[in-house]
Image 1 (spheres, one colour):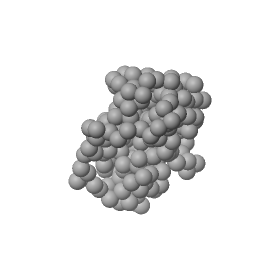
Image 2: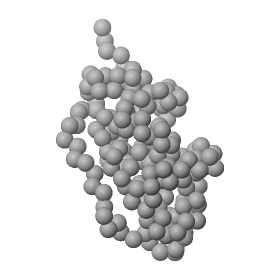
Image 3: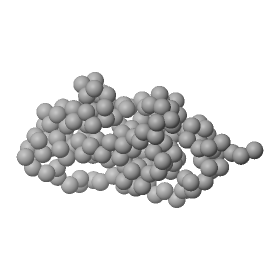
Image 4: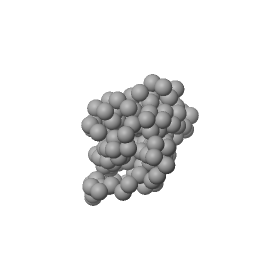
Amino acid sequence: MRTDEFWQLIDAARAGGGGEPAAVAARAVALLAERDPEEIVGYAHHQQRVLAASYKVDLWGAAYLINGGASDDGFEYFRGWLMTQGRAVFARAVADPDSLAELPQVRAAALSGEEFECEDMLAVPWEAYRKATAADLPADRDPVRAPDLNDFWDFDDEDEARRHLPKLAALFVEPPEE
């Protein structure tokens, strides 16, 4: 499966999924399950590449600020939610995590405390394969390795948050005392 096909399927799921992340994931399962098993395997491999490309410290910091914390699993689920937002939002967030501050739902979350996660989106290829074949998705023969994160910064340090993610910090971190 090519990059364009991967994101086209997600866009189709978004169009038919009502915009709610869990509904987008359910629609993606339904759409993917209609395809050949080889295409489902290709989707799974491509999803792993997308997740590896987004495994970045500043994006993790953004998830931490937005969701009020982000464990390893929480960061995975945040990236699942980010996938449900479509290719343009995903790519922009990977290139510039601070751009998430421009999303209306993220701005609203600064007041509401809403968290953004979608574990269901991560399970799409496994659910689709099971639905299409009544079998488990085969293990990836060429697994994608996540990059090593050696440049962590302290996500609880408000000054570091302001330095790395100034727009998000303006929304989610208390202003410094004068």
